[in-house]
Length: 387
Ligand SMILES: *Cc1c(COP(=O)(O)O)cnc(C)c1O
Image (tube, rainbow, N blue to C red; front, side, top):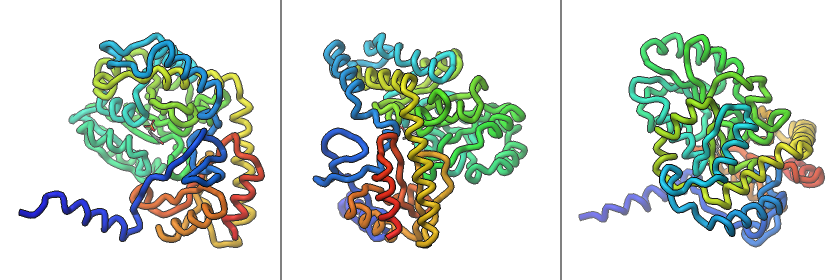
């Protein structure tokens, strides 16, 4: 008999041949605009910590204090023995930030999407999904058992066409979309999506993973920035990006949140968020509200970086994908070119990862800017790209 596991090595060999192979790299010390990566100090353009809060002493102190008072782990699911007042405080803070009735926190953003989508739709329902949506939305859609149809990226005519053709054949319909597309950095046309949803009687789930803390006067996200506060929808997000901790959330009506607490399997059958993560997230949300200058600094950095890229890159046959966020992508012709560019940048002290298929359709260098990057760091990076 052949060993039933030999296919693993064959598969890995195929992945390597396509230049799709990935491996982890070790970061030492506190996270920030510079990090120590595989033993070398580098300017970090690969972090989701947009406001530079993950290493903030107030978050660290809040986490330490919570661990000392409440322990390292929460020991059970929320509905059994794991629920603490701290969880409720965090959920209230999220609902306040978002301007919704209520919110519920999950152990990660990924689990928030899996749990929410499977709870609100099933076999008799339809999901319409942007082709560039995050893996957690796509897998949540598959897991729900609903009929899933993708529309081409941000194509509202195509979305309308699908609604006209299919909406009536199903009980409920859910439109799912990233607000900021995580691998491209562009935004979804949320007002138009909500108008279509109204016209065809659909629910909308918007994933604010990269929006929260970054967009909007109060840092509430793209829903606020795009003028959609107060419209009924399902807002989800993560506590692990601008909020600099770990966990996910859903914010919305009291009925929605109450329903999720009763029907979302990835909330019911998993351990409650740890006290340290919960306290750090709560501290971050307070800072997001009380220190808008962090967000303003981030946007100054974004504008500065885009300006330098536009000025410099057309000389070099490099094109920048359209972006309205801290996520900026420089397009490259194939995976090998992206890997070589990333390596060249790394040799020059800039950590800017290559993102390749199958994560995205086309290879690119993807950077994410932070409020804590200096202008010199950004300038150095753009100059290096152009060399
Ligand atoms: C990161 C991300 C998630 C997952 O959030 P985690 O808390 O890291 O699990 C979900 N959606 C999008 C768009 C993301 O970028």
